[in-house]
Length: 242
Image 1 (cartoon, rainbow, N blue to C red):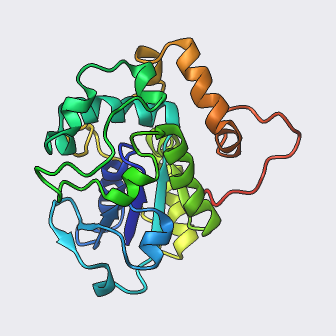
Image 2 (cartoon, rainbow, N blue to C red; image 1 turned 180 degrees about the horizontal axis):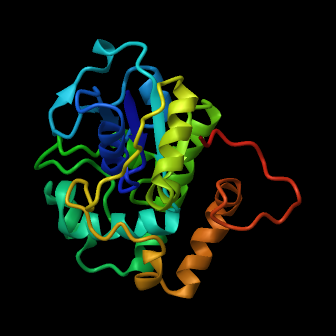
Image 3 (cartoon, one colour; image 1 turned 90 degrees about the vertical axis):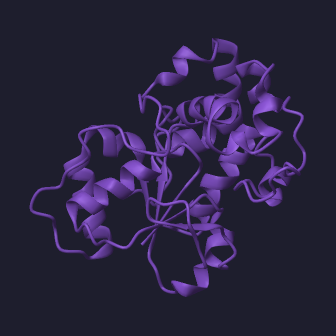
């Protein structure tokens, strides 16, 4: 199975939950590519919990499951990630974040327009930079999630997995026609690639009200669709949530 996500959305939590609930030998791949990149076999794909890169065309017909997280929390985690750890250590990224505020981050005031020349293989593609991963982080989140919704890829919310793991795992099993696990479980501790808090609502510790308002304005309709904001209509649009 390919587990896809926007960065810092609970990828490892989902993979570990699947492994514990179904099989330790469950073959898992992960990617932060957009749906079009994944479905056209152009995405950067990693094997399981390692950092090794696999060729996507070696894994034809793999089912894809997308995990989505409230953009306010995902972008909170991204802000800290780019400043201090992981791919930010690929020359140029952390330096670009060193002197900006969370508000400037959301408004795209990061002066990074090219893959850092010191390490072009750091995992941030030029295509994603061109799509606004730094210059328009809210818009990039919208594009990323929307690409999977448009492709009708099954989707699970990080919040549902964290708060109702057994129910969520059972829904995933039903979605893919798998045998129901006798004891759906989630990890007892936080897992991930240098995980932070994994806290729902952590955005309140970073973003001020006016910055949150910008996120909600720019991503509002999609947040309503995914039930991160109350709907302003009586009808809830269809999603591919499982």
